[in-house]
Length: 457
Image (cartoon, rainbow, N blue to C red):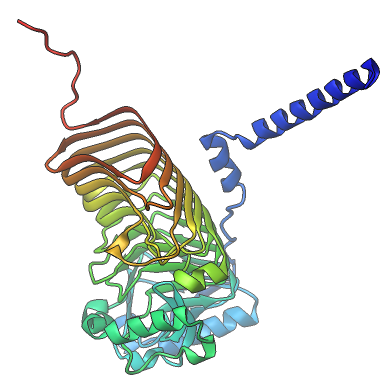
């Protein structure tokens, strides 16, 4: 090789190296830049100017009259006019059956208005396509349901009451056979047309579900007394949830459950739930892996946690969860666990690129818990848990565990960074790391911080 060729080769390599370096720098966005990039893709739908007063369709808020027909009529007009804002004026409106929202429709539940759903399960038939704990099935309709719709909103300062305590929630102790059947159908890849539940199966419907929807807003309303999960975003995108209040204390009353969903903003929420405040999911086991639709680009900020757990990822997350940001949140009361990432070797998939910043809890059972052994079951499909970041976390007291990380021997939890994490006191185990690698702790203390060491006297 002559000198000219050698020089040419060196220059070419330098150009390639510089290009790769520049491309790497472009990819290495800061956390704030990543959030700003996600927010550009989240835009609430426009509210229709076509106002439809529910009282003009026979609606009566006297806490006695069934308003199902009135809502159906208003929805039909909204569809006919390609959009409408259904206004529910002050009063108590009984609705014996589901409200099925359509594209370009807003449900405006005004201050002083309350919708209470009836408790006769037959009113929620026929079966509709839905999902139950990470498995697609046909089941009772969710109380408020939107399927393959876009530009949908639920707004106003009123209340949606699922009447769960006196209705569907009573089924909890009878659901086990059907619950196990859904999982069997999942593992055996049973065709969806044969996954029919409903009468005799006792699987409770969700309170509000958006299924394969785009451009969603839920704002200001109070959500109470849900029969099952409160708000389920399923295979949906471009979602804004803000200034929502929860008051729901029945079994499995999660607040928000984004599943197979992306570009989600949850902000300024007052949680008060008997279960997870936010539980990010992405399908269960074989079906989740086959669906392969990641839950991603989810921002949770400026909210107050109160309930079983604050932020949860899993356990149904087999398609993978990534790009989750939790910022500037505090507590409104007790949480069993503050931050809980959970999977097991039945799931597969991944949990990666999680950022938790400026979050505070009072008393918890465990402050930060990351586990690949949820319920101690499963084999063959370990989850990749990688690039998890905590900064500026404060917890007053942990009754059992401070920081727990449990990986799997063949798939260790990897690349966890903690900076300025303070747990003032811990009655149990301060730090427990199993099958974990590349764990970086910077300015972390559990219990009274040790400062200047004592000297020999």
